[in-house]
Length: 452
Image (cartoon, rainbow, N blue to C red; front, side):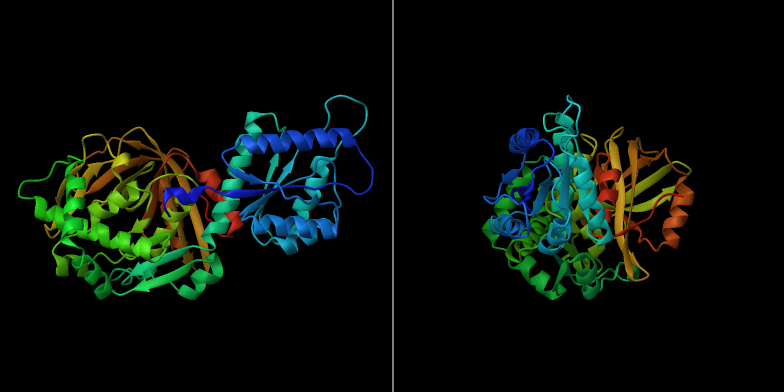
């Protein structure tokens, strides 16, 4: 999904009261301050013309929000509303919702709003109905409240967007990797994701049919990156990789894909004499989600990170470990922004000596998150772990780095993940995001696999 698609429209629903009660002056003051605060956030807020106070007005307000293109609702009770509206709201809005409660008036001797109580009523009803939501409590004037609102909206919108995402698959999973096989019906039923399949011959046709001028222009863009190359590599090797890059862009853009998984071996290098890894690294830098080895669930893992605003991610093998480190390695498609400055070099695959891989090391002393979505025993699962990169202990061809993990025993965690059926790829993202990912697991819903 290109970066320009990440903005979201949010409906602001302030539920009022038909009967007098509490402090209406305080309620109006809070409502105005809350709407003002939402307008200052990096969102596209919409306030429906109809004020929801009962069943008919709630229906109109939700319909107005839907017609305005809102992807989620921020629901506030400036003073406690009618709890009977909660089941109606659950009927009307099927996606995740953000409930926002505000504090009482700090002075005076009586209860002014019961906003938190009213929000608690709605939230508990939604939970008993099996409906996901996010909860924010705080004063509209506080910056921390705004930050929590943005995080909550991001989670709700990411869950909604994933449920209407479309993921492409070129070929199938790589030979022997049946743990990465995908069931289109289960994918749609459990996550809402549609799978769009392409044959390898169809992909080869796209690669080979790219116009020469288009390829030359793209090669010039790669040359402008001034990436060093191993001896014996040159412009022809860049040209075939540009063909890979352009063909994958055709699929992503022309087929309206949010992510793409490609069976990159053995057919691609055998037929075309090159690997597509530089193309994959470039696409990741552009915010495009492309996974190798036909790993559809791996592509969905990277897409989740993108939808949550976690930035660029890629898939890596879990090569080896000790008590508190994991050696991350793959034949060479890590985004350059995650690599140590000056470490990237274009070279040949370590195994069959065909071009073109990105040999690089991950930048040391940076926070990273390892996580994965996969399916086992008829259900989807998710795990995540926060780590920091350390200097590699040895030099390897391909993209590699050391993940230092302090909060768990890595061999025990690894064994647990194997018993949970997790495939051998983990997605790697810059920054620490485990708490946000665990919150998203509630929305989808996914079983969370914790360390133990």
